[in-house]
Amino acid sequence: MNVAVCVKQIPDTAVPGALHPQDHTLVRDGKLVMDDSDSYGVEMGLQLVEAAGGGEVSLVSMAPNGETSGLRTALAMGAAKAILVSDPLLAGSDALGTAKVLAAAIRRLSPDLVLAGTESTDGYTGTMPVQVAELLGWPSVSFARHVEISDGLLRVQRQTEVGYDEVTCPLPAVVTVTAGVVEPRYPSFKGIMAAKSKPVEALTLADLGLDASEVGFGGARQRVISIEDVESRKAGEIVVDEGNAHERIIRYLEQLKIL
Amino acid sequence: MHKTWVLAEQRDGVPAGIVLELLTAARGFGGAVEAVTWGTSCAGAAAILGQYGATTVYDVEDIGESLAGPKVAAAIAAQISGGNRPDAVLIGATHDGRDIAARLSVRLDLPVLTNVTGLDTSEARPITEHTIFGGTVLLRAGFTDGLPGLFVIRAKSFAAEAAAPAEPQPPEIIAIPVPETGASDAARIVARHAEERSGPKLDEAAVVVSGGRGLGSSDNYALITELAQLLNGAPGASRAIVDAGWVPYAFQVGQTGKTVKPELYIACGISGATQHMVGMKSAKNIIAINKDREAPIFSISDLGVVGDVTKVVPKLIEEIKARR
Image 1 (cartoon, chains in turn cyan, orange):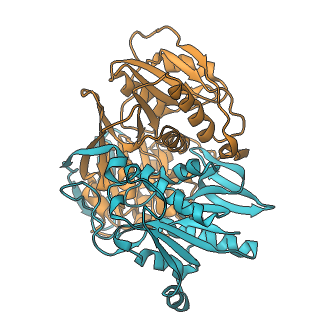
Image 2 (cartoon, one colour):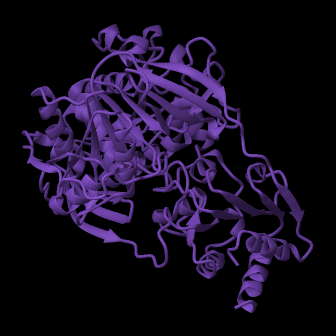
Image 3 (tube, one colour):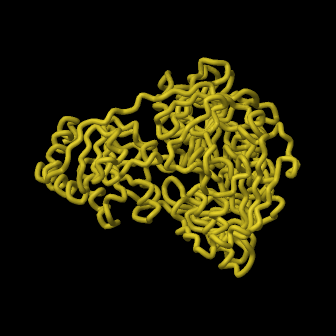
């Protein structure tokens, strides 16, 4: 059972997001970390490989400047190796361009299963994993809240707007997992040390045989027209509860004629 | 703009709320408005789609136990490749909508603009609006090439309004075939589970009372349910307590959950992560109760109570009951 997990390396979410003034891409200059949403896929992959009694978890990522710090976190959790695609030509790629790159990287691994988060924390486009599935000609199950494999068949509880569906799916397949689906493990000291020597294969666009016109700003075929600050809601009255704040709420509800 | 398509997700002949919002938006383009639907009961849905301006309804027909993504995307792509091409396809940001958009994008080799919260239809190429960074920045974007434009639109971005006249011609229903989808359509739904909830629907209720981590334990969520019931509202939740398994996903308000726009939103023990605020900041009035004076939720609330929800809410419940 070999699992490929898509891992996005993003700016620390504690730092407020910003856009480049010229090309309007997200600023990703500083140190990048593994997107928390992807830690669930990594954990799920590790658990499925353990349950299958063999195989390994590989990571696929696309990042500027050969950034690997986020990948090292996932390797420290227990992933065996990683493919990292970095190329100046990729700057400005949209979800479809990214999906083409990751699908090409995944083909080199020929895994049984691809896992990804439902959407990234920084860009939250939310289409990339299923685009990968369509590019590979594979089935996909998005919004998985429980995943198991028996007799080579995926059994997934897929979130719906009203509850959940039980879905079966043959392999190979792409599954997107929701946050909370599993409890991601903390890397152990041993894991962190081991991660330093695990293989990270660095690839360029040419290595993947992709044409530059399919990715980057050109391939995205979209542009940012303007950016402006929104007049934000103003903070209203603040009451510190000294045992009777509920009375203030009651008066507010009366004003709104809710009571 | 001569033709706009709206993806019309429906259940038992009732279109999802967002479909009516998208049809209303599509009328703004000025050209023909057509809908694409799938599943059983298309005829029932078509009448309602017509009231909101659809003149033609393309019916992918019963997709059986398949997931919607592969078959619906393949059927639409085949129409477009065959020359029946709209200028824009409007897709609701639902689970199935996102699957269809992703697969359609690959089949047509066209980009998608997602998380759209507004559309300016006055230009030849529509300009999209996206509220980013937790709603503090408005970004406008557009496609530079390729038709149709694929747009994934967030719920509650437009108010649904029926078209005039009130009794329009029923739309023409045209069945469209699903081409061979191969392995991509191998997933099957074997059982469907609805997590029942009573009272008004979360995304339609005039009052929403949501709980978060500040409740301390899942047992205390009963306070949220009770307060919501007393105010004839719907209970909601932050992602943190959905992830923790306290309440089902159907309760979640935020970027990855429901977008709500009630008259009154009461946030109980919710700090106000960006992910949550995106889903509720358009509420008309916001009351927040939180222990932490520095919680971001207070920056957008009309009335903020710095205090322990497990102390304030029980007293509030008692007082409301005493008035009945």
